[in-house]
Amino acid sequence: MFTHPDFDGHESVTWLQDPGTGLRAVIAVHSTALGPGMGGCRVWTYADAAEGLTDALRLSRGMSLKNAMADLPLGGGKAVIFGPLPGPGTARSAAFRAFGRAVAGLGGRYVTAEDVGVGVADMAAVAQETGFVSGLAQSGDAVGGDPSPFTALGVLRGIEAAVARRFGRTDLAGCHVAVQGVGNVGGALCRLLAERGARLTLADADSARALALAAELGAVTTDPGVILETPADVFAPCALGGVLTMQSVGRLGAAVVAGAANNQIWDEAAGAALAARGVTYVPDYVINAGGIIAVGAEYLGGQTRADVLAAVEAIGPRVGALLDRAQADGVRVDLLADRMALEKIAAARHGG
Ligand code: NAI
Image (cartoon, rainbow, N blue to C red):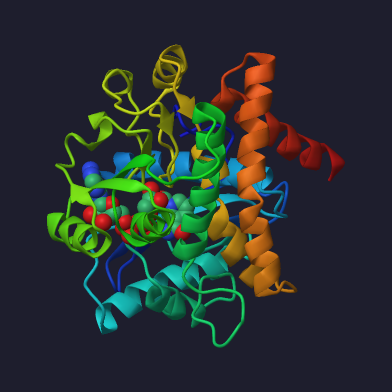
């Protein structure tokens, strides 16, 4: 474990197996230097346990960097549950309650919320077992619930900032955005983009979902296998991570890459290739922080909806400042973001 290529100094990695429900999961806590390790829980069907572990480690580290860059008093952690899980019903709730008991056992070092394949009802089941959970249904004007709309708003602001820098444009009217994955975040993002007059090409592994949204918004769809190379102004990856590889970067059809997916850059070689191609890349964990800002506020308390929206809106200027600084310093923007985030974490570690 300690020599795993993605281990990167994780504070803890917990494997779970619940005999009663068959739940199998791993909870990775990368850092609690800035606060409790907070990050969502993903349900995914991995080829094997090793693939799930790699995902958990990469996502957990990403949460440390994301929370640090968003100036949240939170560390980084992430959980993956080995799917498939049953659909809504007692068996699924029981699995999430078992997961909740394991989260409780970590004593607040990890706080969970939704990620891919997990919904508000699942978090409600977790909340029956532990208070170290967020993303719960809220009534009235209370802060919280599904983080996706906040993530989508932050991504929109990040796209605007990147487009302003790359193309000198102050609005998105007529700007062509190719969106990969139109689920909770990608779908909400498409609606925000359409409201601003952007031209959309959509692709989703679930073609019916892409077709329905395209009909609603007057957009076109394409095959998920070619969305990355679709000639466009912006490519917005909103499906899963690892889409930017050394091979795929060479096929990119857009000059700007800005989207919600976590861990878009597969490895160092892909990051270098992206920069060599002159792509304006917006670091994923900077642009997609809207959701954690919202669920973090729900967990930490003391903030109004207006406070949360203001913090999500601030993603635009943050992305702009980051792109400007990378250009001024002549450095890769993804490496600059990593360095800034790691410095904040190190300062907290030494201060605390
Ligand atoms: P989701 O599960 O609602 O949507 C993902 C969509 O991508 C689905 O419609 C799925 O069919 C599609 N998809 C999967 N593989 C695909 C492929 N190869 N090509 C095209 N489409 C594909 O997930 P959600 O919540 O929208 O998250 C999307 C991404 O954003 C994930 O990487 C997630 O980790 C990240 N993210 C989500 C946040 C949130 O607030 N939900 C917060 C920060 C990051």
